[in-house]
Length: 412
Ligand SMILES: Cc1cc2nc3c(=O)[nH]c(=O)nc-3n(C[C@H](O)[C@H](O)[C@H](O)COP(=O)(O)OP(=O)(O)OC[C@H]3O[C@@H](n4cnc5c(N)ncnc54)[C@H](O)[C@@H]3O)c2cc1C
Image 1 (spheres, rainbow, N blue to C red):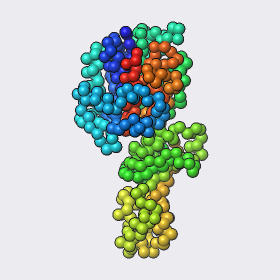
Image 2: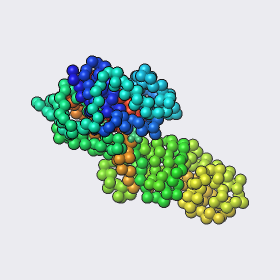
Image 3: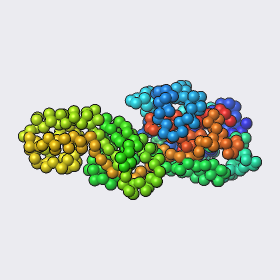
Image 4: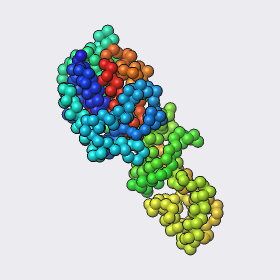
């Protein structure tokens, strides 16, 4: 059978290899000059290819449409992914939080290994070949138009990704083609993206990483996200793993732009989540006893990162030059509360082009979860980020790409 796979990212390469293994004649079309462009930059160039855990971990880390993933994941799990990459020469290791990386710490090694597999199974790659339109007969995809020529085949697997990091090739034009032929495209929004803030605090603290903090996102009084881990202040606002994950829930609010203009959204950082308010107050009291003759501004060295001290001092409304022994109990209580509730106004998500993933995509109601075949057009299969499935950081998004690609590759 002749198979055309469109898009040579993580999903496209895996789908092409899988279908070629079953004896199909496979052509992989890629619009840029190289393959695996996004894969090469994953995990800061180290590629967090999957996770160490079970299906429950997978489900709880998928933000949208985890049920849709059940069948394809069961058929090609994270353990299968590790086994597969080990078998093609990429040794892997597990790091903090169950993140799995190549031992070499090189994402490039994953791409090279997949490239070798493509060669081994005689997958022909046509570079700089861009899908422009479908050729459809009786509701069946029989061919595609590209910038170069028309291609005809028995089955087609579309793996053109989302809409972020355009320079890697995933610019999102295929969603228009899919829409034209009856697919419902769920709103494309930036996911795993930094949050923008105009708060002076971010400017003052830019470059500061906070580890083991708690980060909440509030819509008015309602908590829409609450997580523990690492975050980073930047000149534009907030970033780092727990902030990025939070963005993937924030982007789902209805009337998002409207909420931002009304300034309903804020982030709350608990710098000392291991201590209750009461325990923190006692801890501050101990420090104040130790530094009782110093000025307030010089009394927080044991408690906070250096860069943060002037910011907290200013926000506390306690005179920075006041002697520590003169600080009242009420002032100390206010300081403890501030340290556990540092408020940052969020004004927007950063643009989709710098988002790690695109949320939204082809409505999974229109896709068979076992085979990945479109229910709208026959002989069209879909895999990877083009689908409306997305997950938090931790290797889950690549696992989605691999599992859906293997399902499509096997089931054509
Ligand atoms: C900076 C960054 C770091 C990341 N790190 C991680 C990580 O460590 N772990 C993790 O799990 N996930 C990570 N992700 C997410 C992960 O990379 C994606 O979810 C995954 O690559 C999606 O794979 P895909 O094959 O569906 O799409 P893509 O990798 O985007 O591939 C799509 C391919 O289709 C091609 N294409 C597009 N349109 C056309 C067309 N019209 N014709 C022909 N070809 C076309 C593109 O050129 C591209 O090669 C990261 C993402 C980014 C941006």
